[in-house]
Length: 384
Image 1: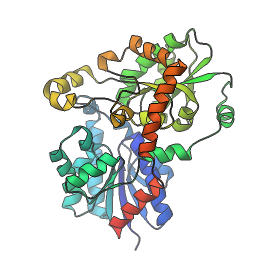
Image 2: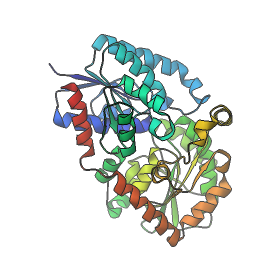
Image 3: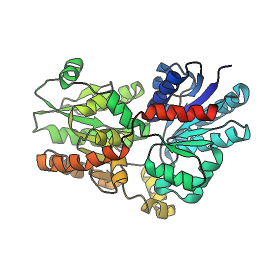
C-alpha cells in the first residue's frame, strides 16, 4: 500500500520550502500521498490541503492573540487527521510554537516525525530546549551545519541536508533581458526592491516605514525604480491601499518569484527573515529592519533579557557570519533617518564591494550538492 505523509507549513516561507521537499520526494517515490496544512505552494504540488493558516503566522506575545481562534481550529483539525488517517510520518516545517504542540500529540499516537527547519535552539536556545525537540522527533533535517552538530550532541538524529534557499536560488535564475521583458521594466533603470515581509504584523509595522523611506530616498534619484514585492495575494489589497498615500514616487507592484527580483536588484530594503538569506546568497547589498508591537518588545526585554541579549543580530546572514555585514535595525532604531543613511551608503561602489565579498563567504559555507534530494532521501529512510 502507498504511504501517507502528513506535512504542515504554518507560514508562507515554510509553505514554499515544504513544496520543494514534496516535489523532491515525489521524484523518488510518486506513490506517496501528501496531506496537510499549507498554502498556494503546497497546493500546486498536489498536496491535499486540510487547512491554510499561512496568513496567521506571527512572532511575539500579543500578536498571536487575534489569530487564536484560527490556530485553535487548525490544531483540532490536525489532531483529527492524525487520529483518523494515521499517517506514516509527520513533517512539520519551522513554526516552533505551533508545531511543538502537535509533535507531542504525534508521539502519543506513535506517528514518527521528521522536523524540517527545526527550532533555532542551537542559535539562541539551550541544550535543554534542544533535548525537548529531540525527544519528540525521529529525525531532524538540519539546514545549517551548526544545527546538525547541536542536535546530535543533544542525543538526536540530525542530518545536514543544506539550506533550501541555496537550491531555490540556483533553480530560479533568469537573464536580465528576459526579466525586464517579462515584467515590463525600463532597461535604463536600476531596481530598488522592497520586501516588507510575509506576515500580517510585518506589514502593519514595516510597510508604512518602508514606503516613507522609499519616497524620501527616491525623490532625487531618477535612475532608481522602486519595486515592492507582494509575498502573497492575500496582502495585495493592503499594499495597494498603503501605496495610495504615497503619490510622489511611483512604486511598481511585483507578484512573481522573489528570487528573480532579488537577482536583478541594485539595492534592497527588507524585513528580517528568510528573504535576507535569499538576498545574501545572490550578493545583493541590503538594509534590514524589524519591528514588534511595543508591548511585546518591552515584555521580552524585561522578562527574557538573558535570552534576548544572546541574540546578537536579527538577520540570518549576520548571524551565520557572526558579523554585521548587512546593516540592520530593530524597533526604535528602525526609523527613516537610519534607513536612509544606510541606503545611501549602499550606492557607493566600494561599500557594495565590501558587502558582496563578505556575503560570498556565506554562499560557500552553505552550498551543498543535491540538497532537495538529500532531504527527500532522509525522509524516505524514516518511512522504510
